[in-house]
Length: 165
Image 1 (cartoon, rainbow, N blue to C red):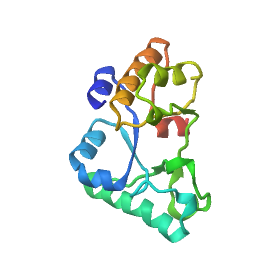
Image 2: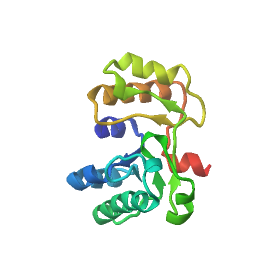
Image 3: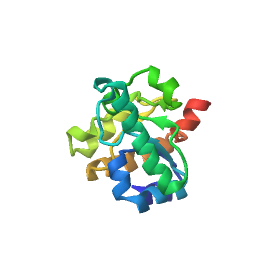
Image 4: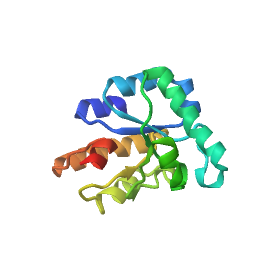
């Protein structure tokens, strides 16, 4: 995926699970070095909304600590697993949740055409597309989506640019 994004001149946002980041520090460094935005996706990929506040905070803080140890930057953005968030955590943790407007449901199928069609039929300006980089079919579909959107004149940006503009 990173090679394909680099070839296309695209920067993406990657929300990292802490335990995976800890096991793959070189990959985390590459994401940062290539200009991708790194966000927080909890340490164990848990449903924040179902945890006591203390545990929810610990999940986010542990992931932030892992990422900081690897690249020397704190995470400012959070994609809560399953889209479940506790609004008051934004103020206590100074982290912004980033949800999505298009869910590819890529984790439910290996059919790249199906994944791509979920995006291209509904995509518009300002949309945030949810995908997972742990499936080959998702990676292939993501690069096809990038090609399609660029051909249609879309500018693909990281979540922070989209939110701040």
